[in-house]
Image (cartoon, rainbow, N blue to C red):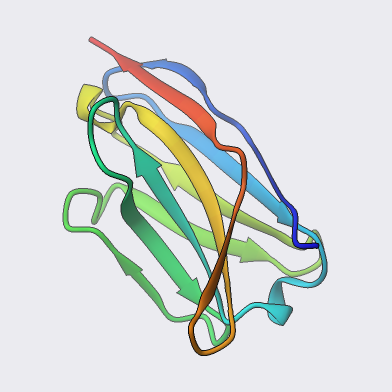
Length: 117
């Protein structure tokens, strides 16, 4: 069974930074892609950023230039570095892994990020 364990959320002030981590069960290369999604109160879950098995990345327009997805092969970890955080970035952030051509999505339990004024 695929498990994804996130960490790194918390409370930060407007303009601050946080670095989220996601450790999947199995090698990160066993997944077609890994991604970060977020869900703010009263809103639908949305894709924040994704990194493919080949290393190609893409970002939601709202976070371009502020957020960076990366991976550490040795640590088998995917990171989300979030800079210049804004109150509108407040949400539960979910790590996601995609397998197969469907693809099938697997989810972590989420980590809360709160950005205060």
